[in-house]
Length: 42
Length: 496
Image (tube, rainbow over all chains, first blue to last red; front, top):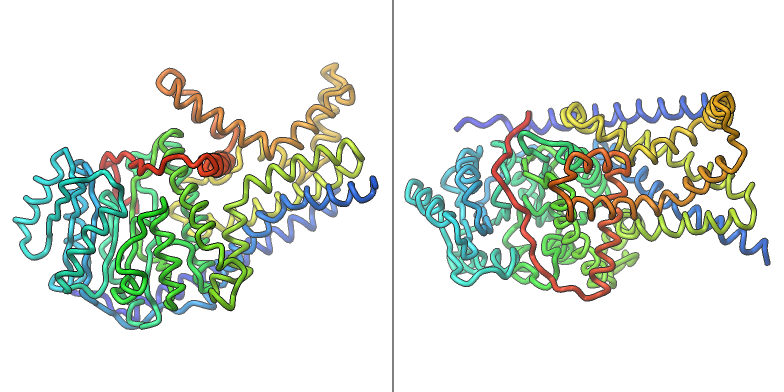
């Protein structure tokens, strides 16, 4: 049974978590923009 | 006097914002997982005994065993014990046949007198394990779950750190073919597991090891008494809290994917979640000495953990309080009631967008399958209120003008009626969800076509709230504690 290198796998997973954080930051920016738009419109 | 009453009522209405703020807090923490938690770089392969409590699991047990034997884990460090709780179907024969094919790897333990529930069954197996003394960690799983090949080794690597006492994986809904209910559960698990448990990793306090994937270090199990609690309906939560109170950490491993089959109908979901809800009431009472006492309970006693725990546990109370106070406020001061209602629901808009879009971004595979259920999680009615709160002129101008064109005067009682309906909907939605459950229970076969549209209308979120409220009632009445097993058909598989 050949297993992937645990360190490489862990580094890839941490990279995945950072991507997740970036996506969440994008969500926050989008919501802030929508809130500003709403305040401007109403 | 009236001023005091108004202030008090406004405060009570805004209590409805607590679960919303807690939801946002949880998702912010989930994002911080990337900065606060580092995946271990070293592999770790302790001797693991996998424990499967099984009662009449003939439909699923063979496939589960085959998948466990295919785990990426050294064969000489892995044993599987099926604890057969006096099954009356073909479970014993099937397990014995597998054990004969894989001697020394699969073991069949039989309880001749069963029916006492999962915790008693696990304890029967644990007594054998303690007597043998071979295991360094035990993985308690359900008979129907499918562990993906790398899942166990990704969990065990955390045990290289002696401060970690237990690890859990990411349970994903895997019914195949899945129906509308399975998709709701799949989306719910993104929020309640992938996001909430990441948040709890950041807080350093886990609420619960997922029942289908509980990896316990032997020393931690022994420190927590060596056996599983049998006095509540939430034995997994009790174990989780006890391990942490004994000074060890409990960790969620988001990349250890475990597929599970979940209920396909409202009645099945109600039965399963009522058991969980009652278990949570029992645990909240039993561990009352730890809430908000950081000195005594570490991170478990922190404000953040209490906010997460009680915002879920007391959700029906917040909903009822908020809408009742809103009606009271409307009787005192209509204008102010409308302002407070708009403020509360505007916060709801922001929370809905943040939670839904974040959930989609956390697990994009599940999002592709369940985006409709994600969007309709609060229900069509609540979504309509959310849209109104997001942009009031939509009703105040556009729809009102359409109504006037159609010869209906929106100011002639209609607007007030709609407004009052929206004020009480937070509570009424739970009642509506309970009625849907009654309909499914009493006339399920005849009206099955109607149940799904009703759940989409009322909302899956309110359905969960209604179950929590039902759990309070059952516990208050001191109802009998029965282990109602969720029916499994074996229709589960890896979806990605």
